[in-house]
Image 1 (tube, rainbow, N blue to C red):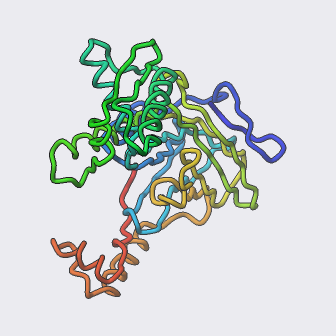
Image 2 (cartoon, rainbow, N blue to C red):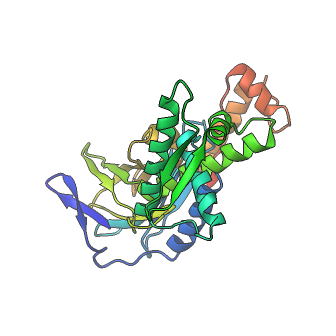
Length: 317
């Protein structure tokens, strides 16, 4: 999908008119899918359309620095490109997600493969939420098991003893079973995001206008989708700094992870100077000499003194 300008807002359009998608998009979707599945936080990569000469840099987490992109010679027409955004794999699950993981495992033991149908998975999770809710509400512990009715009508009895284990599970537990149940729940929560996520995109232009598009759907809303591509278009003849942001709807917005969810795109003027930023990083190290930088003690020293990481720019593309 594409958003264009109309009456100061963002309007979806069916295709990127006159433009093709960069060959980098497919590989970026694959790598960001893997990132989400293995516990990475929701992140954004902006890839300009073919023919646009761009350089980009990113900064370490907790540096408070957005990504920087230079486009020294903006196109004569609109700047087109693709955002790739993935679901958050960095969230911790609750008992509903752990029960959902347990239910999928029970179904797999009966020969049913885990579903990649978004509607079916959301329905399964809702059934697990109802069953766990019944057990939570049973303060007298009179119910021996709650029944999970799956979307295809299969009935799974969730025993109270199993529910208690799910409730106590923790990824930090020294008990192997409790840790496994918690990690399985985390994976089920990621899958829920991949089944239900929509996204929010904003572009703040040099003249102060902010373009916004809410609840951008996944490319395949009926499927489990870990990373989504969103085609974007910045108006023609814009020069200066454009702030482009994207985040999962309902999350902490770009400010929750500015290092990976926000770009400062410099179109023609006031380009980002990576060499100056590297000098600033050296000065930052010198300012905090009590931190033993680039040693095994760095993390502990930074935590003790409340110091962020060195804001050293890294080439993104």
